[in-house]
Each structure stands twice: as C-alpha cells, then as structure tokens.
Length: 478
Image (tube, rainbow, N blue to C red; front, side, top):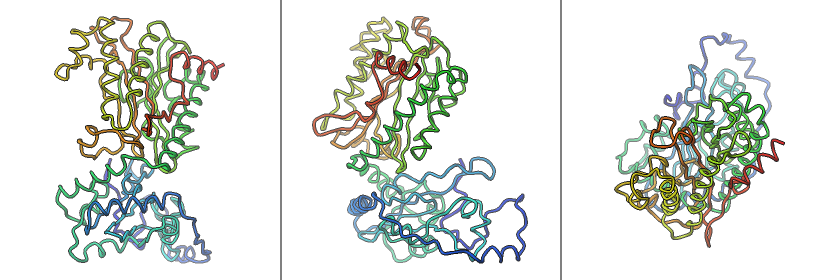
C-alpha cells in the first residue's frame, strides 16, 4: 500500500487532483460553476460519543502533563493507479476525537484539545467540482468546520493552521507515528516518545465503557444476521463456492454497518487449515466442512470477530462431529476460565489443556499431554497453531501497542472484551495423522465481555454446539 496521496498541509486552494483523461475546464465554465449556489451550513446535534471522547482526551492528557500530543487520522491510500481504497480513519484518532474524516489531526495539550481538519471547499474554488479526492461533486459532501465542531463538541480549526500552530513555542511534542507521513515529516521526535504515546493510547482502550459495549453488541448482532444470510443462500453457496459467502456477508455489513472489520475468511475443505485464508476462491464441496471467520464493523468502527465451522451437508459426519465437539469443549473451558483478576492467558491455557489431552486420546502426540503442554515442548501446537484470544474493539486485534506486561501478560478487568477461538488444523499433507483427518480445519470463536462476576458472550445468538449448529442450518436451508 502506498503512502497517503495528499498531505494535511495541502490547502483547499491548491490545484485540484485531476487526471489526464479529464476534460479541459475553460475559464468561462469555471467561473460559471462558482456562482449560483445556496448556503447549506448545518447545525448538527452532538454525537453520542462526544462527551466520552472528551473524557478520553482528559485521561490521555493526564498521562503526559504539559506535553503536546498529536494524533493524525490518516489519508487516502492508492488501490490502483488513480483509484483509492475506501477511507478508514486511524483508530486512536477516532477514539479520542470521534472524527472519521480524512486528513485531520487531533492535538491534545493539557486542557486544550483542537481538531485540525480539512473541511469542504467553498464555491469560489475549482475543488468542489474538479477534485477527484476532495471535490463534493466527485467524492461527496465533507462537513464544514462548524458542522464538525457542533457534532464533536470540540474546537475545530482548518488544517492549514496545523504547521504554524505546532511550530510555535518549545512544548515537548509526541506524535502518533506511522499514520500520516506528512505529519511524521513535520515533527521530529525520539522513538521512545512515539512508543509511549502509542502504548498509552492502546492501554486506555483496554476497558470498554457501556457505550462501547453496546457498539460491540450491535456489531455482533449484525454479524449474526450475516451468518444467517449466508446459510440461507446455501444452494447458491454450493453452486458458486466461497466467494458467494464472502459477498453475501459483505452485503449485510455494508447495509447495516460501516464495513467488514477485516477480510472475511471463508475456508472450504482444506482451505480451513490456512488460518488467514482470504482468497476465498475455492468450491464448497458436499461432505466437507467450511470455516467462516467473519465480523461486521459498525458505524462507529467497533467490530465483531466470530467464527463458525459448518458441515456443507448440514450434518456432521461422525469424524467431523468428534473433532468439532473437542474444539467446542476446549472453547467452553476457555470461556469458563474468564473472570476479573484472572490472567489474560487463562483462556488459552484452559483450551489448550483440553485440546492436548484430546490429541493424546487420538494417539497423535509423540509424548504425553502433560509433557506436550510444557512450555519447553508445546508439540501439540502442530495442530492448534495459534493463540486462543486477542483483545477486541475498534480494531479486530485491539490495543496491540500496549505494554506486554499489561497485555497479554496482565490480568483481565471488568469491561475488557476478548475473543476465545481455539482450533484444530490437520494439513492435507500431514503424514502424522490418519488420512481421514487430513484437510480438516475447525475453529469456533466468540466475543466475550468480562463482567463483574465472570463473563458474557456477546455473540451467543449464533449457535455453537454441533447439535445446535445442525438445527440452525436445517431451519435456514429448509
């Protein structure tokens, strides 16, 4: 992916972004286009996240008293030639500001919090009808500074003022780097400063408030609908393969949310043994399983992350059911271990204990289960491959810049949300397993909220046990 194609200091009066195949614009046409437009300034209501974002900024500022903190939202990234990917703002920026527009920068300095943003252009420039990235007639209406301020409850200044304001004085400045190359170039800082800001910004997101939990619940509920849509389309799925599920789920994500939270994983048959199979180009074959790892990102950017492994025929074979039930038992053990004060890794350890003993019972381990579970061995991991949990929130792998002593080596607290997703994967060329197991991959994943007295499964509406999965599929397929 390339760097952003515009910079925050680019002004609205700069030459519009056009292409060689665009028609010429005579001055008479340009002058005519600049006249005869009505004023459409809106007084927007305060966004529900505004007060929460203000509290978050206060906590962030308190972690760095007297310092100036700079968090860009990022810009457009090229997909191919002159076409960009759909813009998605940087998580930290949106978490602390509520803003989702491109090319903006949040600056937090003690109790002064300012959003520098690129608003829609006025009608006295060519940008609104010529610019392919920012022009209203090309890319849609951007909010004005007033509209952003009234919606976010935040002082908003034009992005043109950013460099001048940041270069005044000698205030110690920290930048959330790697988001905007232009801002990175504008401000020099030591690596340690950058790391500290990224770390704190991640750790402040670990515990979700009630509003965030509601956002995650909504994302899980829409995700459930997307899974249901996919199974209802089963005749088409069997005809067109993995892509039909991918497209069906994406339709629901776009209709009721912002997007998918990550590229959907649709692994039919042996593709299920590739952990991040996102090509989704294979068939859906009778007699096999299909692994679906999919999640909807809601309008406020909180995402679900759910996996189910389904029998293509609607019913598991004996071997498939035995393996599925083993993974289900491991997942349930992981979920049951979750509670405030427990170590984050407790779900993984509980799930792996079940899977290792199951592999031992199947005669696959070269040593006993207890020996295999020793951290110096872990030979059972040949068939489990990955960790059981990760934090979940605005990023599917949330809070990833936290100190490792806080996450993943720290303890769970009420309000944290994490996945529990054990799996078994038998590669098609694995000569150490019976032939009937080769090419089978099974994963079950749910999104779990840590509560005061244990946990709550936010994705519980989607059936998990083998019997419930069969009944659910039967009811949808008919």
